[in-house]
Structures are given as C-alpha cells and as structure tokens.
Amino acid sequence: MKLEDFSAQDQSDLLPEPQKGLVYRCLGCQKEHPIDQLLYTCPECGQVLLIENNEFSELKKKSGKRWQRIFDLRKTLNIPALKGIFRFHELVAPVIPADCVIYLGEGSTPMVEASGLLQSQVGARFYYKNDGQNPSASFKDRGMAAAMAYINYLIKYKGAGKILSVCASTGDTSAAAALYASYLSPNVASSVLLPKGKVTPQQLAQPLGSGAQVFEVPGVFDDCMKVVEHLAENFQVALLNSKNPWRILGQESYAFEVAQELDYDLKGTVIVVPIGNAGNISAIMRGFMKMYELEIIDSLPMILGVQSHHADPVFQYYSEPDPEKREWQPMTVKPSVAQAAMIGNPVSMPRVVELARRYEKTAGAGNFHVVQVNEQAIMDSMIQANRHGHIACTQGGESLAGLKAAMAKGIVGKEHTAVLDATAHHLKFIGFQQMYFEDNFPAEMGVTPEKELQNYPREAVPSGLVRLPAPGNPLEGEEFKAFVSKTAELIAKELGLKVR
Ligand SMILES: N[C@@H](CCOP(=O)(O)O)C(=O)O
Image (tube, rainbow, N blue to C red):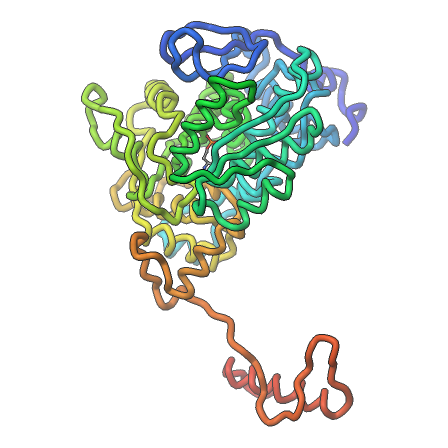
C-alpha cells in the first residue's frame, strides 16, 4: 500500500522519527559512551557493551496496541527502509536515518507450523522459524543489516572514510558480513577469518563469491576470534562479530517477528535457540524484554538455549543451580555436526549472564533454561524434521533435539507451543545429511544413522536396449518408445505400482 492510503495519524507514525538517545553501556562498570564511534568493549574496563536508548521512555507515550498497529501497517508498505528488520525501527536502532538503511531482503522469515504427523511424533505443538530464508541463508543477516546500516551512517554523516570490516566465523557470519559489505563497495571491504576445514564448502564459497578476502586459519573458531579481536584492538578495522553491539540490536528483530506472527500473544510460548557465540540468545531475550516494557506483549515466553555435548560451556555454567556458585569455564570443543555452534568461549557470555538474570527477574524464575543434546539426537532430529516439510540445518536439528530434551526433563509440557530457530538453510550443511545417508561420520562425532531415516538415489537403467539416451545424443522413434516404456516398467516394479 501507499503511505497516502493511510489516515493522517497513521502516516505520521509510520515514518519513524530518528531518536538521539542511543549510548553504549558497559555490562561491567555500567559507564556510558557516545555512539559516534564504533566500540566493541568498554574503553574503561574492557567488558562487552550493549546499546541502550536513554529516550526509551519516550516510546511509552504510545500504547502497546498503537505500536502493534504501527508494526502491522508497516508490513503493507513498499518502503525498502521499513521492509526488513527496520520495520521495528524504534526498537532496533532509531538513530539510523532511513537513507542509511540497507535492505537486502533480510527478516520477515516464515514461521511454519510442523505437520500434524511430526507434532504427534514429537508430542508437542511447534513451529520452525526459518532464518535460513534470509539473503545469505542465516540469521546473521539480521545483525549484519543493523551493523552495516550503522557503518553506512558513519560514512555518510560522520566522515568515517573507507572501512575494512573483519570477522571470525564458523561460516554464517562471514557469508553475511561479506554480502552486506559488498553492497556498500567500494566504501566498505570485507575480510573474513575461517578455521581451516571447519566450514562447509558452501559457506567457504559464499564470502569468496561476494569478493571478500578470505583467510583460512589453523585451529577452531575460538582461535580465529582471538586473532580478530587482536586485529580490532591494534588496527583500523571494523569488527563485525556479535561482540559488536550493533549486531545484537539487529538480531533482536527475531523476537519482534515471533511476537508479531503470534499476534502478540506469547502465553505458553517457548523459544528454542541453539547457542554458539551467544549473541543470538542475548538478542532474543533483549528483544522480548523491550516489547514487554512497551506493553506490546503482555507476557514473556520461556527461553530455551540448546548446546551439543561437544560444545556446551553455557550449559555447564547453568547446570549449577545456585547462581552464587556458578563459575564460568571456557572449554575446548570437539567436532560437532552443529558446526556453527562449535564454540568453547562465546564472546557474549557476559551478556547472557546479565540478560538471563534480568529476564527471569521480569518473567519469573524458570523462564530461562539451557539443555544439552548429543550429536546423534541433533542429526536424527534434523533428518526427521526435513522429512516432514522443513528445511532445518544441523542447528535447526539441535533446536528440535533440545525441545525433546526439555520435554523429557519436564521443562516443556503439552501446554506449551514452541518456536524452533532453524538458524541457517539446510543446503549450507548438506554434507552432514550426506554423511548420515552414507554412514560415514568421523568416529569422533559418534553418529550412527537410523536405517529408516537414510535415503539413497537408485539407478533406473533398463536392460536389453541397444542404446540409451545421453546428453547431445537423444533417442528417436521406436528406440525412444522402447526406452520410455522399459524405464517406466522398471520404476513401476520398484515402486510396486498396480496396473490401471
Ligand atoms: N556461528 C557464528 C560464530 C560467530 O558468531 P557471531 O554471531 O559472533 O558473529 C558464525 O557463523 O560465524
């Protein structure tokens, strides 16, 4: 619809007013820092930051119902700056003017209810939210759209000059960073550091295709992350991992969209999120809390983080029930099929600790959990989901395995409806499906395929023919007819079809 199709009141609310109250706030010493430069950590104490809006209370001048209407009406507009995550402009980054927003099609990803059969197999009502349907095929695009819009703003309005972005990645962040940087070329260029041999071929191809400079580094993601932190501390680069608090703002949009998809009624909802570098679970909790504070939603959903037993430092931390006795211990990860979450020292852990504390204070104790799943359950769940109409990646399999684990523990029950994060498109991780079907997982992953979930292509080559068709050499006449009927008979026999 066009803006002029709306009432004068709606028109004035639909176009957002930039707000000036954003500041970096340190999670350690609580100091505020102006947002006129890109910061990742507090210049005073070195702790990670969140971006707060000191004018947030201004947003309360509108009722929760009014905000719902604004966000719902914006969905019908054809204004690029309001189409993606910036549909929730006032909650994401209200300092960014519309002409700095970069819209590459991110956000508004589908929430697909599981089929009746799959729900009955699992024993719960649930949806998958397919964040693999973002432009670079993962949820990272949400954060990257916000971080790059901010960079664009620094270039356009703050004289930042040309910028080299840099990130460490298990494969999704690098694809997103390279894609968004390439859109801002030549003002922004991208460099990505990947743990050699630890990203899928599809993920390696993505930043290469976007023209990024790709460095394959020995070790695992945590090693790459340290190198990137060193680069950001000592050289003129813009760090684009979720340590960058602008990324967190963008990823909050996942929470806003879930609320909107459920008509802002989140009673009994459980949000299931795999945890890797822990930026996403932080952003999702924060997003829901913002909406709750503005009375856009009247209850907070339960948050359920999931980790593989091969990379589970956050689960280990929360397995101590007494908050006073919890001790943070980074770990050495083992190879995991949930490769995107194979992280032993998540940079956002201080955010998780603080936001989960705040979350439970508002939502009530028992509304934040982390469960552990094994590699076998991740793979079985991914294949099971995809055989019922989904496009879950291995992390999406981890979400379903996490839901099952939470049900087995009595954390989630029949009264709940779960929203599972499929963080990336399954085609990025298709090699793991191949290993499952061919039963050739490396021993350390410890996955044995279930026979009934395996699948193989079968050759359909009829015998007794003199020639077979080949590219550039088609069959004709009687020869072609014989080929068609013999091949069809062979397939009909294999499928056990009845003659009509
Ligand atoms: N799984 C991530 C790891 C980095 O996470 P980030 O959110 O901190 O950038 C990836 O895809 O690289």
